Amino acid sequence: MDPVSLGLPHRDPFVFVDRVVELQPGEGARGEKVFSPDDPMFRGHFPGDPLVPGVILTEALAQVAGIAGGGDGRRFLLSAIRSMKFPSAARPEQIIDLQARRTGAMGGLWMFDVSARVGETVVAEGQVVLNEVTA
Image (tube, rainbow, N blue to C red; front, side):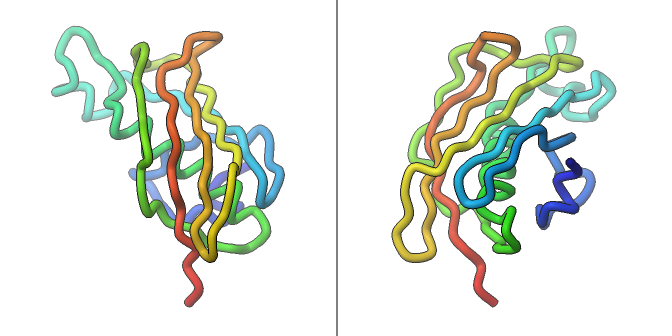
């Protein structure tokens, strides 16, 4: 499934989900991202040893969470990063599996546990909070 058609408000070059492979509106979502080795960010992060920046992985996970929350027509934006760890590295041309599961809500704030994996290896995990946009 195309993330933009599912309500993701971002557009190129800031869409960090290539496709949505699982969606349970209001509960969770799973997506994938493969970064091209020609992406300009790898010229500086890091020359000769390119790694996907943690902040980009965090944004990709927030986008998957937003798709999960917005799968029924709602729109969510990142409000807070409760925690985020990067126990291993992700590199260009690897398939990064992005997962978000809703763990709670309070008013318009929705909490998600998120994780990114390359194969069985966790490259990012944490919690994000999204705020529902109502107008």
